[in-house]
Length: 293
Image (tube, rainbow, N blue to C red; front, side, top):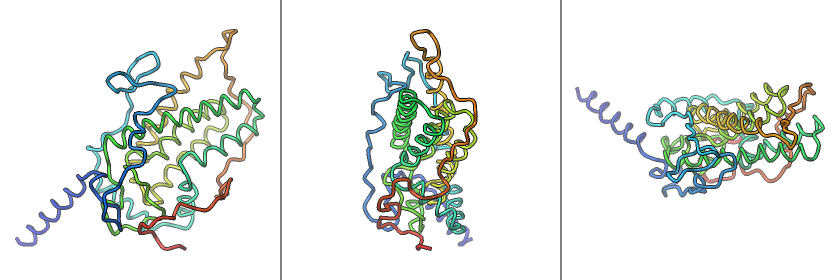
């Protein structure tokens, strides 16, 4: 009887911990509450959409946009944390390499050389190249604004806030978890680039999914952060592609003529080497990390 009471008390205590917000829990190894990075970015300017007076995301002609992302109140983060622990307890050298590669620098860093390689391989003209770069980077910017809106709206904790003994493979960013920024922008970049380069769509999909899963390998995100982030990013990408596809030149012809012949662009990774090397920051923090291999 006494054991049952103790278990019930522990379960209630555990549940209360999972109900706390990112802003209410210190990171593992820290005592102070986290201070958010770019907390107002969710109210920033947009390129392919806008905000209504009520703050809703709407199309440029004023139609409401409904993003299909699961509310975190419906997610079992106790189960999600167990997934993170299992991954970190069984992590491989290859998974650590993937986590460190995609986690180095801002989430946009690894997509830039992918875009450049596509433009070079398919010999896009200067004007075409500028349009691709503008569309992808503006799309990513919109994706970040939307992601940051949801991150600070829902204030979901990171894995190492729910388990103070958790050793992650890379440093945990100092902003809320849900949804994953890497996942959202990867889904967006994948869809927009696949519009311009259809033969490369499957490879781009695999890169987006690897970037996304790298955050679970790193121990800095829950699995649901990734799946919902990719889904949201792809929805944003499709919204943007619909706009691009309907843009016409002065002769009323489509501006874009997506390539048809597959030239098999050599897209990194692999290898998992930074295209522009600089001092690594992915493990440069005072948080508890897995030992170096």
